[in-house]
Amino acid sequence: MLDIVAASIIGGLILLGIISFNKSSSEKMSEYRGEEISQQNIVSLIEQIEYDFSRIGYCENVDSILAPEDMIISADSTSITFWTDLPVSATNFRGDGTRDQLTYELGDYVTETPNPNDKLLYRYKTGTVKDASNLGVTKFRLHYYDNLGNELISPIDTKKITKLSIDLKVEDIYGYDTENPNKSYDEKYPTIYWRQIKVAVKNLNR
Amino acid sequence: MGGKASLILVVGFSMIMLYFGLNMNRLSVSATTNSTNHYKLGIAKVIAKSGLNVAASNLSRNKNWLPNSPYSYMGTDNLIINLKDSLGTKIVTSTGIYQDVSKTVEIKIALANFSEFAYFSNIEGNIAWTGKDSILGPFHTNDNILVKSHPYFAGPITSQGGIIKYFANKTADEPIIVGQYITGIKIDFPTDGITKLSTVASSNGYVFSGHPEVFLEFAGDSIRYKFNSTDPYTTVLGSDLTSTGIIYIDNGDLRVKGVVKGEWSIGCNKSVFLDDDIVYNDIPNPKDKNDPSGDLLGILAQHNVIVTDNTANSSDINICASIYCEDGGFQADNFDKRAVNGNINLIGGIIQQNRGSVGTYDEKGIVLTGFRRNYKYDSRLSKMVPPYYPSTNTFKIISWLE
Image 1: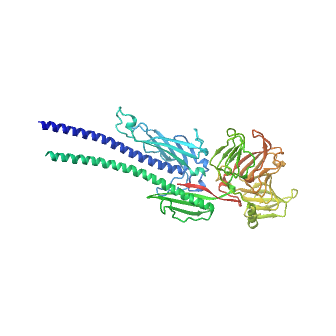
Image 2: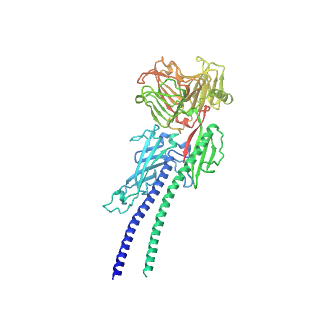
Image 3: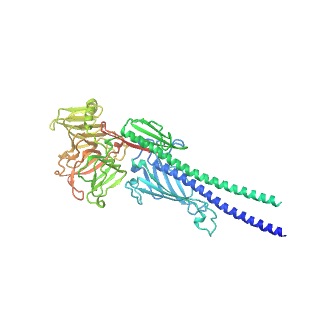
C-alpha cells in the first residue's frame, strides 16, 4: 500500500515536472523561433533597403540619368518614391537602361496577426501590383538631410535631399500566450529588433 | 523492475532534453550565421568601395592608369578592380571578397570640362552673391564665396576657400544651397586654353589675323563679318568658313552678335565684346539636358568678355553661350556708370579667372547701374561640349552602382 502511495506521489511529481518543463520549453522555443524569424526579417529588410536606396538615381543608360535634385520624386516620413534602374536579374546587378520608379511605403496595421502594431511595408515599382509580405515591421520612419547635415522637415523639399536615415523596428508577429491578459506587451512580444540605417546616396552627391 | 523503470525514465528524459537542446542549438547557430553573413557582406562592400578609391586616386594622378588586380585588402587577393574605356567614359568595376561573400560596386567617370560649369571663378574678389542671384548648375570657385541676403545655389557647389563669407551675419545672409556642397577642392584654372584654341583653329578651324577688331554676326546658317564698324558685312555660309565650328581672331578683339545655328566656338587672344543679343536659333529648355536643340556656342577670350555699352544693349541683353575668360572676367562695359539696362538673360555658363561686375546694387539688391543678372544654366552642357573648350583634367562621377 505504502509502495503504491509513494509511487503515485513520485509519479505525480514527475508528471508535474514534465508538464512544467514542456510549458517552459515550448515558451522558450516559441520565443527563440520568433527571434530567429524577426532577425532574418530585419536583416533581409536592411539588405534590400540598403541595396535599393544606394541605387537612387542610377541608370545604366547615362543619358537617362536625371539631375540629382530630380532623382527623388516624393518623400515623407513613411514613404518615398524615387527614380532608379532595377537590376536585370538576380545575377546581373546592372539595370536595363530604362528608368524605373520605385516606392517604399508603410501601410496600415495588419489585423490578421496577434501583434497589434505590425504593418505592411510595401516596395513596388510604379505600374506594377502593390504587394507586400508581412515581415513584422512596427516602425519605418524616414529622415532626410540636406547638404549641410540639417534634417529636413515636412513637407520635404525633395530637391534638397542628399542623405537619408531610416529607423526600422521589427517584432515577432505571433508572440506567445498573446491571449493572456496578465501578461504585458513586452512579455507577449519579447522580440524586438531595431536598427537605424544611414544612407549616403552617391548619385545624389555627384 | 524498479531499476529498469528508472533507466527508462532517465533515458527518456535525456532524449527529450537532447531534442530540445538540439533545437535550441540550431536556432542559435542559424541566428549567428544570419548575423555573420550580413557582417561579411558589409565588409565585402567596404573592400569593393576601397577598390573604387584606389582607382580614383590613381586616375587622378595618371589618366592612363590601369589596374593590376588582384589586390589584397583585409585578406589575400580579395580585391579585383577592372577598368574599361567606353566612348570617353571610364567604367571602374570593383569586387571585394570577404571569406565566402563578394560584393561588386561600379562607377562610370569621365573627364570634366570647364563648359560643364554654370559658374566658375578662380578669384571672386569682394563681390557678393545676393538674394537676387541664383545659380542653377555646377558652381566652383578657387576662392571664398561672399554671400548677402540668401542667394540661391542649386547644383553641386565646390570651393577651395571653403568658408562662406557672410556680408553681415549668418542669419541675414546664409545661402540656400540645393545639392552637394564640398569645400577644400581646387580645380586648376588653365593658362593655355586660348593658346590651344589658337592651335586647334589653325589646323582645323578658321583664323582671322591682321585685324585689330573683327565684327562677327551669326545669321542662322550664315556668318557675316567685317573689320571696321563702318564697313559693309561680308556674308558666307558658316560651313564654308569652317567645318569644325572653330573661329579664332589672332591678336585682335572680337565683336559678336546674332543668331547661332549649329555648334561653334569663337575666341581671341584679346577681349570679346557682345554688341547685341547672341542667341541660339533653337533656344533650348535650360532644365532639359536632353533638349534636342543642336545649337551650342563657346565664347572664349584671353582677357574679358564684355557687354558693350551701346543702344542695342540699353534694354536687356540675351546671351546663349558658355563664356570663358582666361585671365579676365565677364563684365559690363562702364558697369558703374551706365544707366540701368535691364537684365542679362544668359542661358549657358560663365567660367572666368576674376569675377567681373555687370552693375551696382543697393542694400536690397536693387540695380543702381548696369544689369540685373538672370543666369540660367544650359543643362545640355553637362554632356555637350562646344567644339573646343578647355578641360579641367579631373574626373567626374557620372553614375554609381552598388
